Length: 200
Image 1 (spheres, helix red, strand yellow):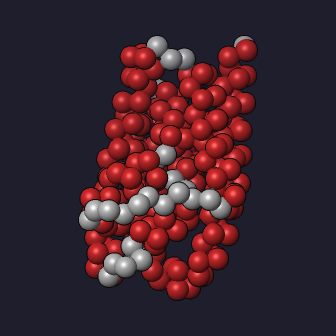
Image 2: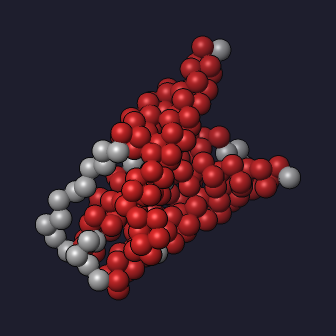
Image 3: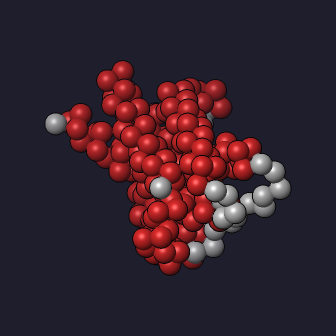
């Protein structure tokens, strides 16, 4: 039961941290002139990039604390603040679309995988997650949950053209704003936990 609770909470939290509907709107803007095959290949490449980077941060993120001499409470407050800024931009509906001056496939890792899908807030949250995992079982459980969340976001990107046809651009914008509200709550929780631990 405890394992399922860890798996489910990690999956839901990380799914929203990846801001799926914001990424879909950016993805559709970048690939407006591309055909279906290119869109699907790009979606696969972005998904693989996000998966690899996420697992590296989850497994080795805790080592960054020791290397940089940063306390976990301080990192929670900093990551929460960055996540809150991301949430504000989503709620306000002001995504930044990068200027495409190169091949779409060259954009798969930078900027699509990082920093658009894995932004500063989600990277910080991953490192904080890493510091909270105390044994191999919890690491494996979290890694599977994160992989599933990444796969779900990748599947949404893969089917982004169909999603746009069904709910339209306005529907995606509405869902993106709802994601922003969830992220704002997650960021507040992260900052409160960091502050509470620090003052103890």
